[in-house]
Length: 293
Image (cartoon, rainbow, N blue to C red):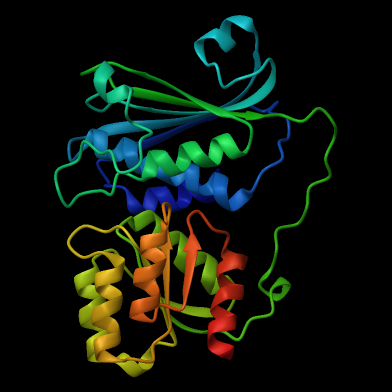
């Protein structure tokens, strides 16, 4: 959480105050740290959008809770037991019932056209469910929103595992052009890949990324781009990059890849597809394979 919030703070407007309330008696859980990291970033980004440019606050809480039959009726995805609950609470514009019923649908967004892909909450929901948890949402128009994320706790003592170091993944290193319309994800990628020896140039605007690439196409060893971006999709960006330099290796990242996307990638010569969310070491291995070809 501390690591995720450091990135969140750098990506959010200065007008948003970040508050935290972390209980001291939280039990351990088993999960993918990179994926849980992305849940935090996605929920924070969504809360920021709800607040907009006015002053506001987002509060992050972590607590241990026991789920009983009453809680299960309110959240059918939850079974009885002990959970670690992460709450993200904002004082944004809130949501009506019709919006609440669709917030986890892929590509559903209340943002204006060109601002947000509508995948943030859908991806977060998928990650939480894959961990055996659930998300409860409380919101009313004009009264803000509280998202409560439940991760199953484990009941046995767990010895902390040291975080992986750059040496844990053999890497050739190199220069990466990384493009994603979510600023927090660009920051996270830059920070993670740098630890593994990569020099990362990041952009949230695909048009600016294209302009930078066209100015110095020979200086990048590989390009990683999100698939769903406003203004220019990842596939459109890939086509224009390869028009400038046909041999540039390109990785397309998406939370919702279909067969038609794979066919389009093959036609464009996109080397690899990666499903979001992904761990930094997984991406590094993929980049290494591309450089070795």
